[in-house]
Image (tube, rainbow, N blue to C red; front, top):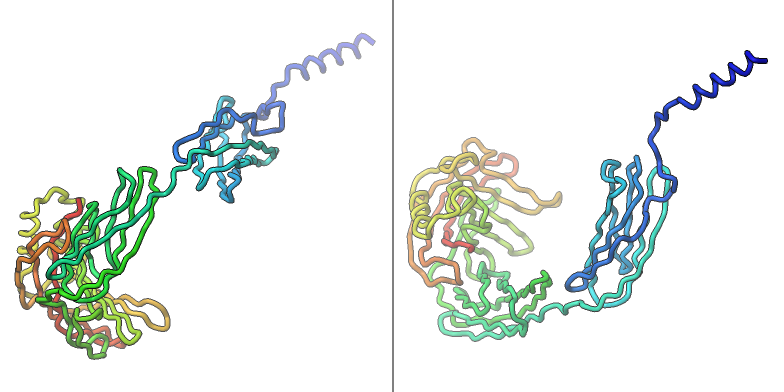
Length: 380
């Protein structure tokens, strides 16, 4: 009997001394512990904080904001500590009372929490409006009529590269036509409103136009900026671009062709962001000179050209760099002074004539003369 008692005592002692090797889980099976805080932000914003129990499992928290919008966030075990507080933010489109639902799901638990918020501080979207006056020689003076103060302004039209961020800009149009002008206003909350008005120009003074004459993929073309067949674009369309782009577009008889010339010389971009306007004009003078150009995309003394068109299979883009014997030659350069078409544009411009040749074999050849204008512009 004493021997049996001794064996049981030893067994009980060993069991009592055995260490727990698995993770220590909380007593509750819930993940969401409580709503820690609700804060109302400017312009219909709300921020909520959740307290949670620690878990050794990936956990997904989904939020239904009560306005048709939802969010899902994944949390890793290292984020789910005993003192963790998770923050969720949202903006509502209008005032009202909204029921917000949180739901947490992981491998061992699933639980929910609901709360209600009352939004009363929604700021109305800004109002966009403007008037305009057509002056002499295609000049148009615009007047912003938006009543709110402290707005940002973005002006542009879809037929030219005219653009401005001034409150009351002036544009010059070089061809008689009707132009849809857009004004977008933005308030400090990032809310934007846009209005469009058609501006009819009948007194424009046209001096020169861009043009192309020759073969594009075995079809003969002869078109210019008269009408809407062809258009020039700004030499720098992106303030961070390191390339000088110019594009013509043909869009007649249901056919659209875009041809782009790309010179790799720096004028505006991250590499040289502080060029003065005179230094930038000198860059144009340095690289826009007659002669056959190197074709490539690696160094600043190389050029490329491309043609983009639509066919039954979708959009096709062919690069001159694909053709070993392609040729880009500048045959004529004319530097001119012209009125600034819009603010930010410099008075110097360059009319450049190119001879383009490339044989894309089965697709056909490009062989023609392109005349296009390079505008000097800096986006501040």
